[in-house]
Picture 1 (spheres, rainbow, N blue to C red):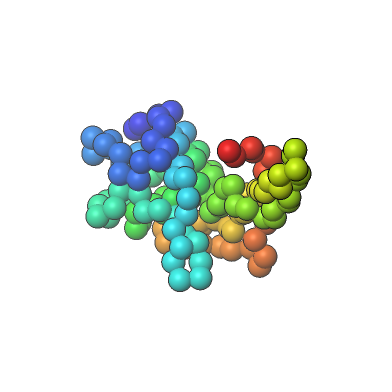
Picture 2: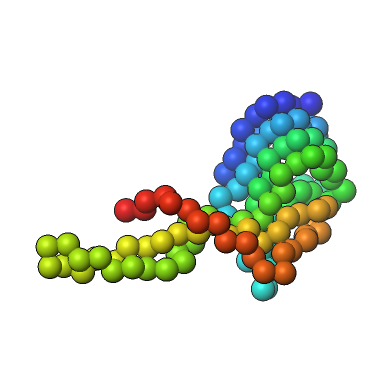
Length: 130
């Protein structure tokens, strides 16, 4: 069993054949657009070995077929999505300023199975992006 490891941003980490993970972070930066729905990035692509994830961070992830997830964060979300743009004037120049939100679409409830909100949830994000 691998415990407390950070594999975020890497959908195909080298785990030495291990199949059990406890409190590991596999978060992917963005979900994948599949038709009209966002789904998770497939972990361990090309390897259908079932794995066990307990209390892992699986944001924007899709686990291999037959895998089990216990008390994991399986949110499907996008971050820093421009919601509106304001114009401000500085020294006679008009400058656009973007306002951002994070959008939560739903979650993965099982391998390849998703549950979506009827209307995606938008959360304000005060991050400043230059």
